[in-house]
Length: 325
Image (cartoon, rainbow, N blue to C red; front, side, top):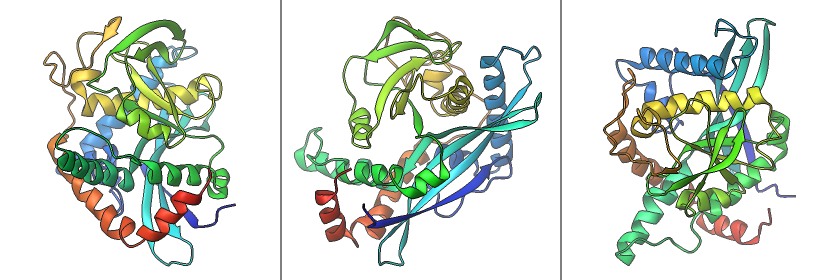
Protein backbone atom coordinates (compact mmCIF):
# COMPACT_ATOMS: atom_id res chain seq x y z
CA UNK A 1 0.00 0.00 0.00
CA UNK A 2 1.35 3.42 -0.89
CA UNK A 3 1.66 5.89 1.96
CA UNK A 4 3.93 8.36 0.18
CA UNK A 5 1.16 10.97 0.04
CA UNK A 6 -1.53 12.05 2.44
CA UNK A 7 -4.64 13.86 1.26
CA UNK A 8 -6.85 16.40 2.96
CA UNK A 9 -10.29 17.10 1.52
CA UNK A 10 -11.90 20.49 2.13
CA UNK A 11 -15.44 21.40 1.11
CA UNK A 12 -16.95 24.81 0.45
CA UNK A 13 -20.49 25.68 -0.61
CA UNK A 14 -20.74 27.28 -4.06
CA UNK A 15 -23.53 29.83 -3.80
CA UNK A 16 -23.97 33.54 -4.53
CA UNK A 17 -21.85 34.42 -1.47
CA UNK A 18 -18.87 32.33 -2.60
CA UNK A 19 -15.38 33.87 -2.58
CA UNK A 20 -12.51 31.81 -4.06
CA UNK A 21 -9.97 30.46 -1.57
CA UNK A 22 -6.38 31.63 -2.05
CA UNK A 23 -5.37 28.11 -3.14
CA UNK A 24 -8.12 27.89 -5.79
CA UNK A 25 -6.99 28.04 -9.41
CA UNK A 26 -8.55 31.32 -10.51
CA UNK A 27 -9.04 29.99 -14.04
CA UNK A 28 -11.46 27.39 -12.68
CA UNK A 29 -14.97 27.89 -14.09
CA UNK A 30 -16.74 28.84 -10.89
CA UNK A 31 -13.85 30.92 -9.49
CA UNK A 32 -13.69 32.97 -12.68
CA UNK A 33 -17.35 33.89 -12.22
CA UNK A 34 -16.86 34.94 -8.61
CA UNK A 35 -14.64 37.92 -9.39
CA UNK A 36 -15.20 41.53 -10.35
CA UNK A 37 -18.14 43.87 -9.99
CA UNK A 38 -20.70 41.39 -11.33
CA UNK A 39 -19.60 38.45 -9.15
CA UNK A 40 -22.79 38.00 -7.13
CA UNK A 41 -25.11 38.42 -10.10
CA UNK A 42 -22.92 36.06 -12.15
CA UNK A 43 -23.19 33.34 -9.51
CA UNK A 44 -26.91 33.89 -8.97
CA UNK A 45 -27.61 33.66 -12.72
CA UNK A 46 -25.42 30.57 -13.20
CA UNK A 47 -27.07 28.74 -10.29
CA UNK A 48 -30.53 29.65 -11.60
CA UNK A 49 -29.58 28.26 -15.03
CA UNK A 50 -28.53 24.98 -13.40
CA UNK A 51 -31.80 24.62 -11.48
CA UNK A 52 -33.90 25.42 -14.57
CA UNK A 53 -32.03 22.89 -16.71
CA UNK A 54 -32.29 20.20 -14.02
CA UNK A 55 -36.07 20.65 -13.72
CA UNK A 56 -36.47 20.61 -17.52
CA UNK A 57 -34.67 17.25 -17.70
CA UNK A 58 -36.53 15.78 -14.69
CA UNK A 59 -39.97 16.48 -16.12
CA UNK A 60 -41.78 13.46 -14.63
CA UNK A 61 -43.85 14.18 -11.49
CA UNK A 62 -42.75 17.79 -11.88
CA UNK A 63 -45.67 19.58 -13.61
CA UNK A 64 -44.62 23.13 -12.68
CA UNK A 65 -40.93 22.53 -13.38
CA UNK A 66 -39.78 23.73 -9.97
CA UNK A 67 -39.62 20.61 -7.82
CA UNK A 68 -35.82 20.38 -7.58
CA UNK A 69 -32.82 22.53 -6.75
CA UNK A 70 -29.16 21.65 -7.28
CA UNK A 71 -26.67 22.56 -4.57
CA UNK A 72 -22.97 22.68 -5.38
CA UNK A 73 -19.97 22.06 -3.18
CA UNK A 74 -16.36 22.75 -4.12
CA UNK A 75 -14.14 19.83 -3.19
CA UNK A 76 -10.50 20.90 -2.77
CA UNK A 77 -7.84 18.24 -2.29
CA UNK A 78 -4.52 19.15 -0.68
CA UNK A 79 -1.59 16.80 -1.04
CA UNK A 80 1.26 16.38 1.42
CA UNK A 81 4.34 14.31 0.75
CA UNK A 82 5.04 11.94 3.64
CA UNK A 83 7.59 13.25 6.17
CA UNK A 84 7.08 16.78 4.86
CA UNK A 85 5.07 19.62 6.35
CA UNK A 86 4.60 21.14 2.92
CA UNK A 87 1.04 21.02 1.60
CA UNK A 88 0.31 21.57 -2.08
CA UNK A 89 -3.15 22.28 -3.61
CA UNK A 90 -3.64 19.19 -5.75
CA UNK A 91 -7.03 19.07 -7.49
CA UNK A 92 -10.45 20.67 -7.29
CA UNK A 93 -13.78 19.19 -8.34
CA UNK A 94 -17.46 19.96 -7.86
CA UNK A 95 -19.91 17.81 -5.91
CA UNK A 96 -23.63 18.05 -6.67
CA UNK A 97 -26.55 17.57 -4.29
CA UNK A 98 -30.20 17.36 -5.30
CA UNK A 99 -32.88 18.95 -3.12
CA UNK A 100 -36.43 17.64 -3.64
CA UNK A 101 -39.04 20.13 -2.39
CA UNK A 102 -41.79 17.45 -2.53
CA UNK A 103 -40.09 15.12 -0.08
CA UNK A 104 -37.73 17.60 1.63
CA UNK A 105 -34.88 15.21 0.88
CA UNK A 106 -31.34 16.24 0.01
CA UNK A 107 -29.55 13.47 -1.85
CA UNK A 108 -26.00 13.22 -3.13
CA UNK A 109 -25.30 13.73 -6.80
CA UNK A 110 -21.94 13.13 -8.45
CA UNK A 111 -18.43 14.27 -7.54
CA UNK A 112 -16.22 15.40 -10.43
CA UNK A 113 -18.16 17.55 -12.91
CA UNK A 114 -15.65 20.35 -13.28
CA UNK A 115 -12.01 19.29 -12.87
CA UNK A 116 -9.00 21.50 -12.26
CA UNK A 117 -5.41 20.78 -11.33
CA UNK A 118 -2.25 22.86 -10.97
CA UNK A 119 -0.12 19.97 -12.25
CA UNK A 120 -2.29 19.77 -15.38
CA UNK A 121 -1.62 23.49 -15.91
CA UNK A 122 2.09 22.73 -15.56
CA UNK A 123 1.86 19.93 -18.13
CA UNK A 124 -0.12 21.89 -20.74
CA UNK A 125 1.15 25.46 -20.18
CA UNK A 126 4.81 24.81 -19.33
CA UNK A 127 5.98 21.32 -20.37
CA UNK A 128 4.03 21.02 -23.62
CA UNK A 129 4.65 24.60 -24.76
CA UNK A 130 8.41 24.33 -24.05
CA UNK A 131 8.56 21.00 -25.90
CA UNK A 132 6.78 22.44 -28.97
CA UNK A 133 9.17 25.43 -29.01
CA UNK A 134 12.19 23.10 -28.90
CA UNK A 135 10.84 20.81 -31.63
CA UNK A 136 9.58 23.75 -33.69
CA UNK A 137 6.43 21.73 -34.47
CA UNK A 138 3.51 20.19 -32.59
CA UNK A 139 4.51 17.01 -30.79
CA UNK A 140 3.95 15.61 -27.31
CA UNK A 141 6.70 14.63 -24.83
CA UNK A 142 7.05 10.87 -24.33
CA UNK A 143 6.03 10.78 -20.67
CA UNK A 144 3.43 13.56 -20.95
CA UNK A 145 0.81 13.32 -18.19
CA UNK A 146 2.36 10.25 -16.51
CA UNK A 147 2.97 11.88 -13.12
CA UNK A 148 -0.37 13.69 -13.08
CA UNK A 149 -2.23 10.52 -14.01
CA UNK A 150 -0.58 8.51 -11.25
CA UNK A 151 -1.19 11.22 -8.65
CA UNK A 152 -4.88 11.29 -9.58
CA UNK A 153 -5.24 7.50 -9.46
CA UNK A 154 -3.42 7.43 -6.13
CA UNK A 155 -6.00 9.81 -4.67
CA UNK A 156 -8.99 7.93 -6.15
CA UNK A 157 -7.66 4.66 -4.69
CA UNK A 158 -6.86 6.21 -1.28
CA UNK A 159 -8.71 5.53 1.97
CA UNK A 160 -9.35 9.29 2.14
CA UNK A 161 -11.40 9.14 -1.07
CA UNK A 162 -13.27 6.01 0.05
CA UNK A 163 -14.20 7.66 3.37
CA UNK A 164 -15.45 10.84 1.68
CA UNK A 165 -17.25 9.64 -1.45
CA UNK A 166 -19.57 6.73 -2.21
CA UNK A 167 -18.96 6.62 -5.97
CA UNK A 168 -16.10 7.35 -8.31
CA UNK A 169 -16.00 10.68 -10.17
CA UNK A 170 -17.53 11.66 -13.49
CA UNK A 171 -15.91 14.64 -15.18
CA UNK A 172 -17.82 16.48 -17.92
CA UNK A 173 -15.90 18.59 -20.45
CA UNK A 174 -16.45 20.42 -23.71
CA UNK A 175 -15.84 18.62 -26.99
CA UNK A 176 -12.64 19.45 -28.86
CA UNK A 177 -12.89 22.08 -31.57
CA UNK A 178 -10.38 20.29 -33.81
CA UNK A 179 -12.17 16.93 -33.98
CA UNK A 180 -15.18 15.63 -35.92
CA UNK A 181 -17.96 13.78 -34.10
CA UNK A 182 -20.35 11.29 -35.70
CA UNK A 183 -23.84 10.59 -34.41
CA UNK A 184 -24.52 6.94 -33.55
CA UNK A 185 -27.80 5.01 -33.23
CA UNK A 186 -27.30 4.65 -29.49
CA UNK A 187 -29.59 6.79 -27.34
CA UNK A 188 -29.94 7.02 -23.55
CA UNK A 189 -33.07 8.53 -21.91
CA UNK A 190 -31.02 11.02 -19.88
CA UNK A 191 -27.59 11.30 -21.52
CA UNK A 192 -29.19 11.51 -24.95
CA UNK A 193 -27.64 10.66 -28.33
CA UNK A 194 -24.17 9.15 -28.37
CA UNK A 195 -21.49 10.53 -30.70
CA UNK A 196 -18.09 9.10 -31.60
CA UNK A 197 -15.00 11.15 -32.51
CA UNK A 198 -12.96 10.62 -35.66
CA UNK A 199 -9.76 10.31 -33.62
CA UNK A 200 -8.44 10.44 -30.08
CA UNK A 201 -7.63 13.91 -28.70
CA UNK A 202 -4.72 14.94 -26.50
CA UNK A 203 -7.22 15.52 -23.66
CA UNK A 204 -8.56 11.96 -24.10
CA UNK A 205 -5.03 10.55 -23.90
CA UNK A 206 -4.24 12.70 -20.87
CA UNK A 207 -7.37 11.55 -19.02
CA UNK A 208 -6.69 7.94 -20.01
CA UNK A 209 -3.49 8.18 -17.97
CA UNK A 210 -5.74 9.16 -15.04
CA UNK A 211 -7.54 5.84 -15.59
CA UNK A 212 -10.64 7.45 -17.15
CA UNK A 213 -12.61 6.29 -20.19
CA UNK A 214 -14.64 8.73 -22.28
CA UNK A 215 -18.00 8.68 -24.08
CA UNK A 216 -19.72 11.54 -25.89
CA UNK A 217 -23.43 12.26 -25.48
CA UNK A 218 -25.76 15.08 -26.50
CA UNK A 219 -28.55 15.28 -23.86
CA UNK A 220 -32.18 16.06 -24.80
CA UNK A 221 -32.58 19.70 -25.95
CA UNK A 222 -28.84 20.31 -25.92
CA UNK A 223 -27.21 21.61 -29.09
CA UNK A 224 -23.85 19.79 -28.91
CA UNK A 225 -22.38 16.67 -27.32
CA UNK A 226 -20.32 16.66 -24.11
CA UNK A 227 -17.32 14.53 -23.16
CA UNK A 228 -18.08 12.38 -20.10
CA UNK A 229 -14.96 10.94 -18.44
CA UNK A 230 -15.60 8.09 -16.00
CA UNK A 231 -14.51 4.80 -14.42
CA UNK A 232 -16.61 1.65 -14.68
CA UNK A 233 -19.99 1.86 -16.43
CA UNK A 234 -21.31 5.39 -17.00
CA UNK A 235 -24.81 4.25 -17.99
CA UNK A 236 -25.41 1.83 -15.12
CA UNK A 237 -23.31 2.97 -12.16
CA UNK A 238 -25.25 6.22 -11.66
CA UNK A 239 -28.94 7.04 -11.25
CA UNK A 240 -30.84 9.30 -13.66
CA UNK A 241 -30.92 12.10 -11.09
CA UNK A 242 -27.17 11.81 -10.48
CA UNK A 243 -26.43 12.03 -14.21
CA UNK A 244 -28.85 14.96 -14.64
CA UNK A 245 -27.14 16.86 -11.82
CA UNK A 246 -23.90 16.68 -13.81
CA UNK A 247 -25.54 17.53 -17.17
CA UNK A 248 -27.41 20.56 -15.80
CA UNK A 249 -24.34 21.88 -13.95
CA UNK A 250 -21.80 21.49 -16.73
CA UNK A 251 -24.09 22.50 -19.60
CA UNK A 252 -24.82 25.76 -17.76
CA UNK A 253 -21.11 26.44 -17.28
CA UNK A 254 -20.33 25.56 -20.89
CA UNK A 255 -23.05 27.91 -22.18
CA UNK A 256 -21.14 30.67 -20.37
CA UNK A 257 -17.59 29.62 -21.40
CA UNK A 258 -18.19 28.05 -24.80
CA UNK A 259 -21.32 29.83 -26.12
CA UNK A 260 -20.16 29.31 -29.72
CA UNK A 261 -20.63 25.55 -29.15
CA UNK A 262 -23.16 25.14 -26.33
CA UNK A 263 -25.35 28.20 -26.85
CA UNK A 264 -25.34 27.90 -30.65
CA UNK A 265 -28.61 28.39 -32.52
CA UNK A 266 -28.16 25.26 -34.67
CA UNK A 267 -28.22 21.74 -33.20
CA UNK A 268 -25.33 19.37 -33.95
CA UNK A 269 -26.10 17.19 -36.96
CA UNK A 270 -25.05 13.65 -37.90
CA UNK A 271 -21.53 14.89 -38.54
CA UNK A 272 -20.49 17.58 -36.07
CA UNK A 273 -17.43 19.83 -36.07
CA UNK A 274 -17.35 22.18 -33.07
CA UNK A 275 -16.35 25.71 -34.05
CA UNK A 276 -15.20 28.38 -31.59
CA UNK A 277 -15.51 30.96 -34.39
CA UNK A 278 -19.22 30.21 -34.87
CA UNK A 279 -20.98 33.60 -34.92
CA UNK A 280 -24.48 32.09 -34.82
CA UNK A 281 -24.83 31.87 -31.05
CA UNK A 282 -26.23 33.78 -28.07
CA UNK A 283 -24.29 35.10 -25.10
CA UNK A 284 -25.53 34.58 -21.56
CA UNK A 285 -25.92 37.59 -19.24
CA UNK A 286 -22.82 36.44 -17.36
CA UNK A 287 -19.44 38.18 -17.53
CA UNK A 288 -16.45 35.99 -18.35
CA UNK A 289 -12.90 36.79 -19.53
CA UNK A 290 -11.56 33.97 -21.71
CA UNK A 291 -8.28 35.74 -22.57
CA UNK A 292 -7.45 36.27 -18.91
CA UNK A 293 -8.11 32.59 -18.31
CA UNK A 294 -5.48 31.53 -20.88
CA UNK A 295 -2.90 33.93 -19.45
CA UNK A 296 -3.47 32.79 -15.88
CA UNK A 297 -3.10 29.11 -16.84
CA UNK A 298 0.58 29.80 -17.60
CA UNK A 299 1.05 31.54 -14.23
CA UNK A 300 -0.56 28.60 -12.45
CA UNK A 301 1.65 26.14 -14.32
CA UNK A 302 4.72 28.08 -13.20
CA UNK A 303 3.38 28.02 -9.63
CA UNK A 304 3.18 24.20 -9.74
CA UNK A 305 6.69 24.01 -11.18
CA UNK A 306 8.15 26.28 -8.50
CA UNK A 307 6.34 24.91 -5.44
CA UNK A 308 5.87 21.22 -6.25
CA UNK A 309 7.66 19.84 -9.32
CA UNK A 310 11.14 21.34 -8.82
CA UNK A 311 11.45 21.01 -5.00
CA UNK A 312 10.43 17.33 -5.10
CA UNK A 313 11.72 16.43 -8.56
CA UNK A 314 13.87 13.44 -7.53
CA UNK A 315 11.25 12.01 -5.18
CA UNK A 316 8.42 12.41 -7.72
CA UNK A 317 10.46 10.81 -10.53
CA UNK A 318 11.35 7.79 -8.35
CA UNK A 319 7.80 7.38 -7.06
CA UNK A 320 6.29 7.65 -10.56
CA UNK A 321 8.79 5.13 -11.96
CA UNK A 322 8.12 2.53 -9.25
CA UNK A 323 4.47 2.87 -8.24
CA UNK A 324 1.94 0.42 -9.65
CA UNK A 325 -1.67 1.68 -9.68
